[in-house]
Image (tube, rainbow, N blue to C red; front, side, top):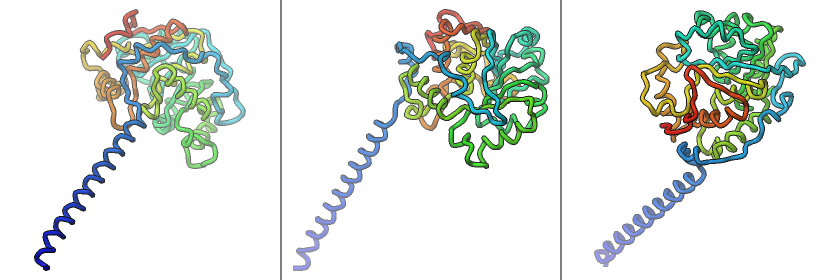
Length: 314
């Protein structure tokens, strides 16, 4: 009797094991399916086919978008003509410094220095746009980025949880303490409401939700929008067109002040194609800038952008 029951017990155990394996496989499949459905794969090649009607940036109210870090300073400066000096190594050996210095308003990004590079990038600054990840690099060198340019305005952007006024340990209060030592410099933080508008603008232009597509907006994106808000005409030095990396170029350092920084095109392409983790969509942003050029009076040089700038990109 016992010998007859053993095979039956083994058979039942085998059946239960098979059922558990089947259930596990089914649950795993459903998790993967749900995860994939909650994401928006980023396909940059579709963007050139989209025709959207994004909001007019020039109708945004400056006072609503930027919070004064120290004092009750208000942001009402407007320039007829601005230049954006990028951090690109394309600016090296251009002798543009004197021409840049003659501009009405000069905009720089993050911790791009002028000392030692005046011949190519000039030595004057009106506005500087700084990412949350670059705050410490800027504040650690006040002689370079703060005291040298009295009257300049700095715009700090970052996730609202890092820029809120409530937590004394966050970046807002660090920026506030630093700026109080330099009363001739105006510091502003992009408001939470405006951070949302930057995201919505990205969605309107690309058809992609920034978070679901695992995309990070670059400082270049914030700088271009701020320039359009502040300036009637914008000229950009050193930004490559969106199709630049489709034609194999010689290697160029990503930053003019970091000769050993990663190759520019490799950085752009890896970020554009990245699916795991969050990535800057540099080439996509440049496609958007190409659309904005005739609308907001934006021009580009070193290198020049031509009419085919939106075609045949990576």
